[in-house]
Length: 106
Image (cartoon, rainbow, N blue to C red; front, side, top):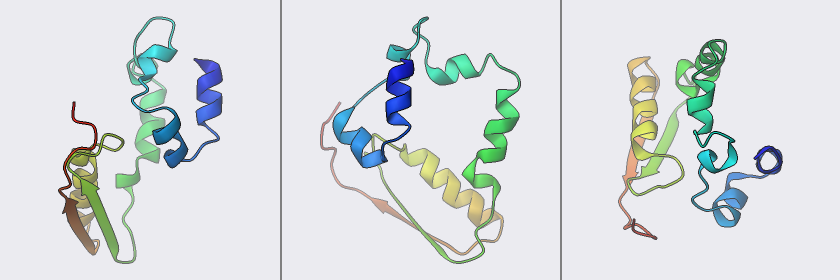
């Protein structure tokens, strides 16, 4: 698991999608729990994640955000939530939904 995380840390998202499709972090841990499930057991992790969460900042220039309802890399609901949070903070956001059919259903 550590070797895979080290490798993925140096790859762009395009590489990961094509070379490691459908990789689950639970396959990389000793206890079979996902990386997030394990990080949830570390109280110091939550404030760090919140500080780095992209939605905590407000863009100063107009932003175009698009997401596919069938995106299996970045869940649609997360992208939509980000756009909504930026709008609530006064950012100029244009959001579009890509409704292409799933490439690999299921």
